[in-house]
Image 1 (cartoon, helix red, strand yellow):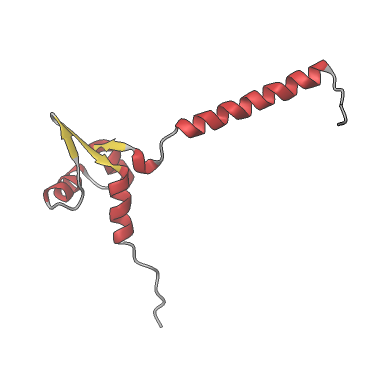
Image 2 (tube, rainbow, N blue to C red):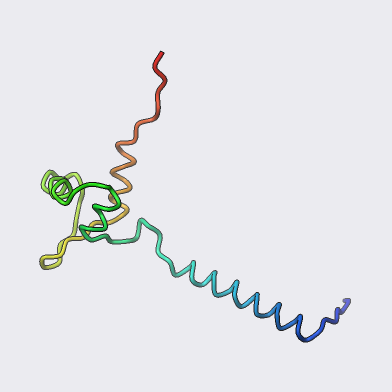
Length: 95
């Protein structure tokens, strides 16, 4: 096995960079995917670019499932994504 010598300052910089990468990976691991997030009414409206009334209509008509705790209503981002995927239309070419 061959050994390599490096200056202490270079080693410290390398170790700092490795710590930085390790921290970034930990942060990424702890970040939830969009599908695991719960959105309140305002966030769901912003995501879908719709009004609160339209979102209320989606709830009333069973288009989007929701959870209610007291007076606060939440939507799973995963449910919104699934709804959008179900209603996805591929582009077509008119001739």
